[in-house]
Amino acid sequence: MSDTTIDPPQTAEPQSTPSHGGGQGHSDVGHQSTTGISNTKLAMWLFLGSECLLFGGLISTYMLYRNRQGDAIGPDQLWDIPFTSATSFVLLMSSLTMVLAVSAAKRKEERNTRLWLTVTALLGALFLAGQVYEFTVFYREGLGYTTSLFSSSFYTLTGFHGVHVAVGIIMLMSLVGMLAKGRIVGDKAETVEMVGLYWHFVDVVWIVIFTLVYLIPA
Amino acid sequence: MSIDVDPSIKADPTAHDEHASHGVSDKQYVLIALFLAVLTAMEVAVTEIAGMPEVLLVPSLLIMMVIKFLVVVSYFMHLKHDSAIFKFSFYIGLGGAVVLYAAMLATFHFFIG
Image (cartoon, rainbow over all chains, first blue to last red; front, side):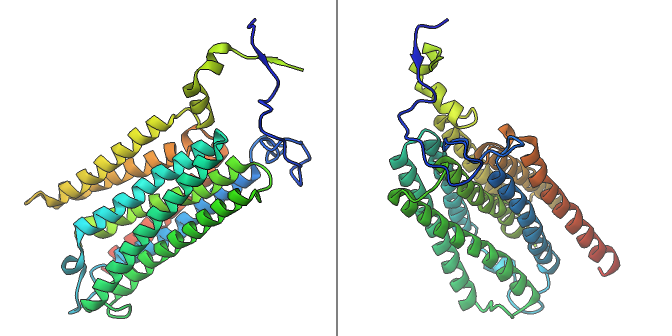
């Protein structure tokens, strides 16, 4: 038996008042259900599973129409692979900062959590700025939304992804604000993790889009 | 009330860090991100190889894409270390999407051209 004893469970963190979740009294277990798994997390994974169907539809529609541009400008004349690679790298790095935010939240380092969340939001905004710039260039080159089946499916797919990134940035900044004001009820680490799952999903969707849309020749 | 704690665990901040992050430390997360960045660079490099036949190019790009996808989902989203029901919830949606849209694309390919 060891000599060292501590009071459970590291009582430096004050217990939050349970507003729901079975009245278990501790913020770390308030989200647990009778099945032993988090309902919030299960709901998020089911949501992300359904999002696969949404993006699957958009990606396959693009794959179907990628060569249907007629005499209009096509993907091979438009893509700027070095630029898109740079924005992809930015989004990939935002996944790293997000996972560091989740890690800091689990260690209850609130300042670091807010810092990494803010960096993630900034990287997301940088990616979005790149996408807006890319759309502007394409439009000036003559690729409007209704120019061809290719352009409609391309703008719909990448636009939907961009909207998801924008929603993610709003979620991240809201989370930073709520953490700063102490307005999160229950398990803070799990709340950060849920936003993180959404953000990583946005990243994995881009991994697929980057390869199928930009890298594989039409 | 008190519980016994192994002093080696208490003294090692990395152990606590790894426990908090599903067995992966922050340093390992950085290494995983570097691996993903290298893989992205390889993807772009492969497309720049002049005269590479499409029959090699497309499968190599798809393999690298799947590896990146699985690494992010398994380690950054912690699905590797999480409950099986979360894996099922996600992969049933993903698998359904792949099968459904592969069938749709095949239908268009064979019946419409």
